[in-house]
Structures are given as C-alpha cells and as structure tokens.
Length: 327
Image (cartoon, rainbow, N blue to C red; front, side, top):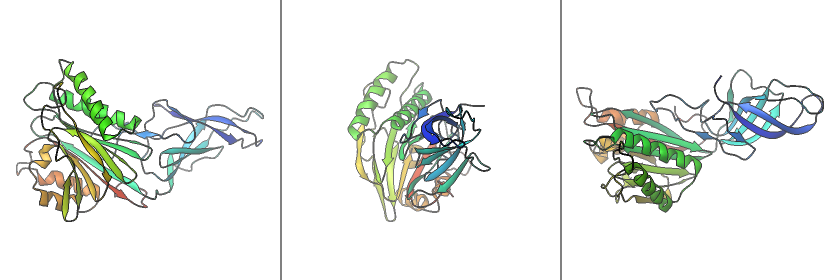
C-alpha cells in the first residue's frame, strides 16, 4: 500500500455537523509518515526528468490542489465513519480538510494554478565514469537544486558526488540557509566525507530559489549560470576549483542573493567545458525547459553517440499561471 502522510485539522462532521479534529491520511509529495497541520509545508524530492526511482506521489504543480484522503476514525458525537475526505494544499502548504467529500476520479486534482511557479527539468547522462549526480528538492515554494561531479582518477568519486548531492538537497528541504551558512555546512560536510576512507572527492553547486530570489554556494568546476537574451551571468565565476569537497580542506564560495531573471542553469563541466557560451545561451533559451535540457545534452554529444565526459544539467525558470511544471 505504500507510506502515507497525515494531516491533523478541524473539520465538520458530514452527518451531525460537529466541529472536531480529524486525522486524514493521504499520499501526495514526499510521504514518509509525516504529520502535518494547516500552515505546514510539504516536501518533494523527485522533479521531472530525473533518471531515478520515483519517490513522490502526484505532481508538484503548485497552486490550489485537492488531494484524496481517508479519515482514520469516526465522529466523536454521532459515530459516523466517513470513507472519504479531501485535503487542500495551496503552493504545497496544507490549507484545510473536508470530511466526507471525495476527490472525483483522481488521487489529486489541480483546482487553480499558482500566480507563479518554478518550472524545473533535469537530465544526467553517463560519459566516461558515470560520476555526476543531480538532486532537486522542494519544500513549499522553496527549491534546492544541486549538481555534483565526482573527481575522476580518484577512488570513491561517484560515492562522494552522491553523498554530497543528497546531503545538500535534504538540508535545503529542511532549512533556508544564507550563503554564508551554506559555506559553513559544506565545510562541515567536507570534513565528514574526508573521514570516510571509501569516499573520494567531488565538485558541488547548490542553489536555493524562493520567491524571485536565488542564492547558494559552490566548490569545483561545476557551475551555475543565469541565461538571458543577450547575456550569460556566471554565478560561480569566483569559485575555487580545488581542493574539492571531500578533501578535508575545501573552501566553498558564496553565491550571493540576487533576483532570478531568465533561466537558471546548473551543470557539470561535461556540459560547460564543451559548449561555448553563445551556443549555450541560444540552446538554453529555446523552447520550454524540458526541450531546452534535451537540446543542451544533444549539443555536447559526439558523432559516435558518446560524450566527452559525464553530463548533469538542471534548468529552471520562473513562470506564471500554468498548472504543470513543463509542457
């Protein structure tokens, strides 16, 4: 049956009209037996495009969404035991519940789009070593986007990239960190990874996006860029390439807060090293984010169908008034 989350909220009994607290089980988002009340933000960990087992239920569309639920018990006054309920979310925040009210013909139904939403697409392709990793998480309206590239020629590179990417994504889902706090946390992670003899070293770029702002931190030669018509802003231009994360001696560089304009691109050097910036800008801005990611990957594919290096790409943009993250 899988794992459910639970919302605890007041609602009216459909038979006798008594207002009482109810426990409603549902499956939507990252379900791991969490308990929420109105005003709490739910999380997501598996955006479209990621080539990994799905761990989310439903689709992270934002706006007002009606989700099917099941009451755990009956009314305290009249004893009626409703079979159905609806849990209402607005931009991934629990809004309210209705008991005895079903969601027709679906597990979740988008009722109204958000005023604006972050549209995200991602793709990872193996080149020589399959040591790139990408992660994206969302809590409420706050996204955390991560790309890591395990150091080739060193043992444990893939483990280091996976460890770092998953840790940064999970941390970003729990907290909104300042750029300085991200650097401190990455330095702490650096020491933890260095203490594990099986773990190698990796680059890491982590960017948080909330509202119309972005910020984060980085180490190594993976990058984050803002791509607009006529210009490419290198958010990670000042980062230190070495020592890498996992060395025990890395020095992360802050990505200061700034407005999100155009499209936000995170990528490993398997893309950035082999795609000139004018071509990158042209391809990254063409079509929707999904088709642009696919075109970026194709642009660095060799005639043989292989790649110079592993490729990991995340592309995001702020868009208004649409129910789905991508077309």
